[in-house]
Image 1 (cartoon, rainbow, N blue to C red):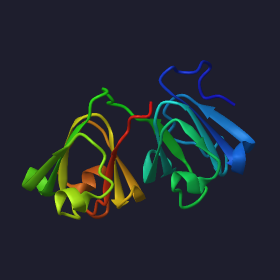
Image 2 (spheres, helix red, strand yellow; image 1 turned 135 degrees about the vertical axis):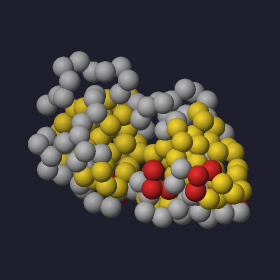
Image 3 (cartoon, rainbow, N blue to C red; image 1 turned 120 degrees about the horizontal axis):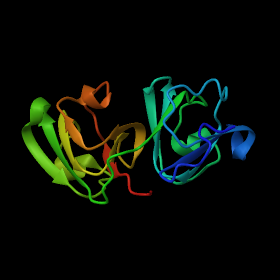
Image 4 (cartoon, helix red, strand yellow; image 1 turned 60 degrees about the horizontal axis):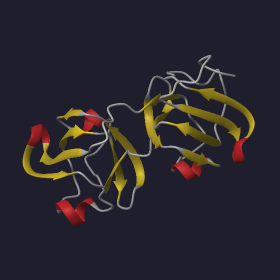
Length: 183
């Protein structure tokens, strides 16, 4: 099954219903707001090109999982909580350079810190456990709920985020940040 007749040079992802790339599969090279008509569960994934954000609900809603090129033989490898993936889209706004500015308060107020590299522990660098707003100046980034790139993930592409709800978080806790650079 294919969503697009020809593979888009920007990205390609293959979903498998069973672990270890077994069972029914679905190949995708475009954003897809509804995947449930193509498979009922997702237990393994191959990202052949690009970086992708997967969502547990249709129309790009729910928990997010950001995957770069590689093989994920079971959902725990992409830090999934279950085998439900209902929509996906390619990560955009990647220029090759990275720069992000973090703020301790909403609307770009309070203490600020800028980075162009991954931080496995936000607290070690920023002395804060909360980020209430940020400005992604270059590149695409992942916020993780816990240190060492663990917990819920949030994709932040180039632009302004005046409040943590702008990146679809339920609270401002950020434990680590990582650049998306494995294209």
